[in-house]
Image (cartoon, rainbow, N blue to C red; front, side, top):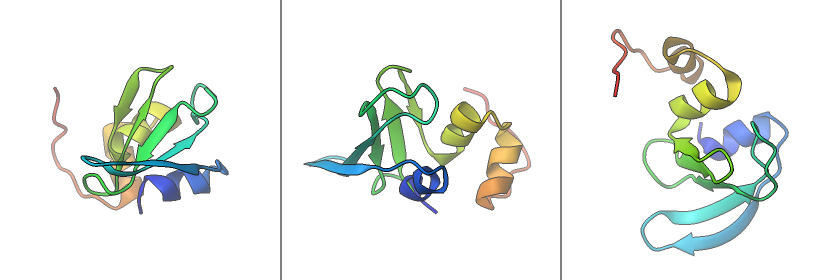
Length: 92
C-alpha cells in the first residue's frame, strides 16, 4: 500500500504534477482532511509507501501519520491498518 492507494480508497482523485529531483514523482489532490483544493502533495516514491504534505494544514508525514492526521486513528490503530507490528510507540 502507498499514499496513492490510501487516497484512492477514500475516493480522492489525484493528478500528476511534476517530478522533483529529490522526491520523485509528485501528485496533487484535494486534502482529505481540510478539503484544500490542489494543495495536498503526495510523493509515493519517497520512503516506505510514500510521504505527503498539505499546505493549508501545514502538516505532512508518512502513511502512519496520514492515518493519524486524516482518519483520527491512534498510532497503534494506524500500524495495524497498514499491517505493521509495533510494540512501543515512539514520541518525537
